[in-house]
Length: 341
Image 1 (tube, helix red, strand yellow):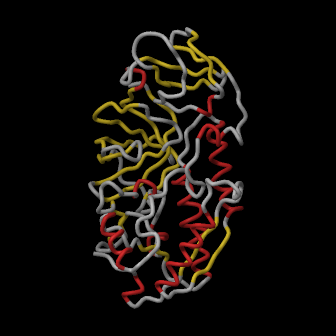
Image 2 (cartoon, rainbow, N blue to C red):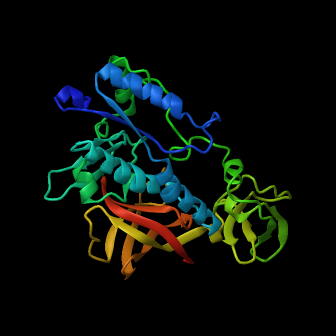
Image 3 (cartoon, rainbow, N blue to C red):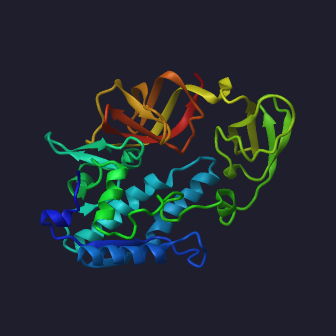
């Protein structure tokens, strides 16, 4: 069972990041509460606490990209970009300036140093594994990172926190957008992207409703369409950005929602170089999904085609493709063009 690094004789300092300032006066953002808990934990462990504000960096390199992707009709994953740009770039660089050799984060993931290069592994708690959000890490980041709770179950982490008398031992797990928190998503997004109403149509061009803006919807979505009538539930199957039309179909597993082959770009490899293609591995097309068997083929210097053994539902441009060899993370990319299959 893991123990805090301070118990192992390491010199440990705490570093609190503030990364969002847009609505500090609202209940959504709990930065003040988070900081007070961080102070309490550091006092309890008798370690110093430093604070740093990355709000500008987060806005420029995470949130603006987040909004641009939605405007382009994609569904981005801000947690992946936040890890790449803030936690394992700005945070890592700041820790280096403070003289730290490593950063230690609370991700449920593990680093294996038994081979000539470092490997990134899934966390031991399958219900909490967060390796999916870390696929952009390479050898440089892993050489300076520790995941102290990666080998532990969530229940063990809470018990350890209780034994140390930490105030967050039984605190509710954080959810929502990275560093922004839980939101009524459409309401939050509409503060930055204006409504742009248009028609909802079937694949044969029958008008069945009205949408408020294509960026408020994602592929496979059911709720919020407000389409009445008989038959199966309606699901988003495509977003036609040129004509501002939202395409829908009836039925959770409608053939138009299923894909055998897709493409991904913006590739990242944990070993800093791709495997030899073609390559058999397992993949996730969304965070909570079970691993899916597939074959990778190279179709360019920064693009691959993924052919799944079984059709996958509602693969969405902008979302992350994350690749595994059993529990070892290979790398990943971002879904782009969809191929009928």
